[in-house]
Image (tube, rainbow, N blue to C red):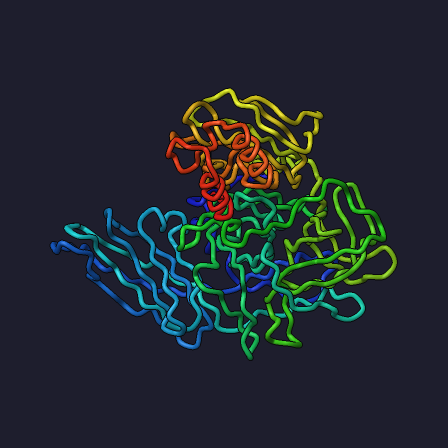
Length: 515
């Protein structure tokens, strides 16, 4: 089956049928998704409302209450939000707040984040001077009991242990797991989780005393905005997602700064593995649907799949299968037997269609990192660059490019002065400030990047940098004394036109101060 690309708008139409309890029982090669939540009709309509005031005001508010529910999520049938207007949702259990304007509501597929507890206050805040504001709530999803335990996937006793690793998230409402593989917010998971996932959560708290799942703060929830997936059975079960930003405007990678990199070579049979995900756990309620890591071994390798004896449960679909700190596969199915060559099953990350989908969704599948060295404004400058790149090239004259393996630590040195009166100011990497010293050490990331040495007009050298090499050290003392002994006018540090011992004192005072 060819992979499928689904937009956020289409996801809004397929979301409701994907929600519901999955059947229990031990099934050979059963998938490990475990949808959570059920649809509850909840119609509210604010009607058309104006705000003639010169400031934003709450023009309508209603409580959304689902008695005895563990959590609530709102799904809208429509909203008209002129510029400056927005919706505000507040959990009455823990005070978590989410605000969505029209673009934000579209990014969240006309829905909200997950809120703990049974009641959420919904407010329509109208922008100053706006007319015809309106919100229509279509239904909610809520959780009233924990779904049936999926019993397959445990091999020789459950050895999963709680963990809290940033690159691994919980997908909802599919009840699956995912991992961040790319700096641009790219996630990978199982294909049978593809259509039923529209939110990913990180920093997930332990579950409650009755095994009810609890949700992290709103800033740790991100909407799924794009997807490619294949739900073609064992070995052809994979998904690639892109995420939007949280309520602080942060991407997943910017917030946590970590990812689980894709392995460059397949795992070997017998290698130690780890499965990181959000499976069920009925024996210890606080671990239910919370992140756990299970150690294991790769037991078999097919052309597109692995078998392994890491412990998994319902909710583990899409968990990262890790070897040596890199992702070699995604967990998809569990088996009744873990003996012999049997075991749980995952799709290999090097399956051709899986690779093609990741390449289409992001630049992180580019194996090397390219750095283009430039100046602003443009000067033809020699930059010292080390180590040599993959082609054996190092130093160069701007503008020029070099290519290294991602993760390589590179050092570049720029001249203090580009031209008369044009002084080094700062480095900018992909447009962001990277450092204020002429020497910069940085780690090469995958993809193509721009590193710019920025120059500004001014006095480039401090007085104590007598040899004008950009550093204040003992070489400046030697250079000064040589000039002073020779009566050179450059050693007249106090500017009185006389070369005497007072110039030595003036220079040493500057040198001790660092400039």
